[in-house]
Length: 94
Image 1 (cartoon, helix red, strand yellow):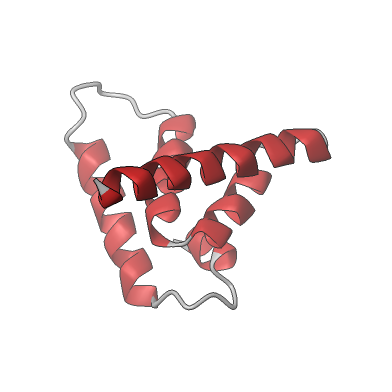
Image 2 (image 1 turned 90 degrees about the horizontal axis):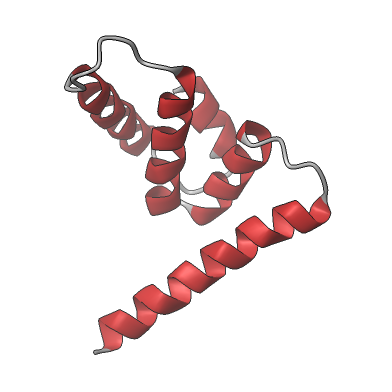
C-alpha cells in the first residue's frame, strides 16, 4: 500500500481505491496454489492494478520497480502503454 500511495502522490486517486487494489492483490495471492509467493508476483500484480487505476501512477511505479536503465527503455514502456490504450479505444468504438 505504501508503494502504491507513493506512486499516486498528487494524483486524483482516493486511498480507498488503493486499499481495494491491495485487498484484491492479497486475495489473489492467497488463492494461489503454490505455497511460496515470490516478490516479483506482488510487483507485477501491483503494476497491473495501477495500470487500470491511473496511468501516471503506473509509469511512476514501473520506473522504480523495473529500474529502467535509460530513457529509451522508459520510452518503450510509455509507447506500450499508449499502444494498448489506442487498441482499447478502437475496440470500444466497434
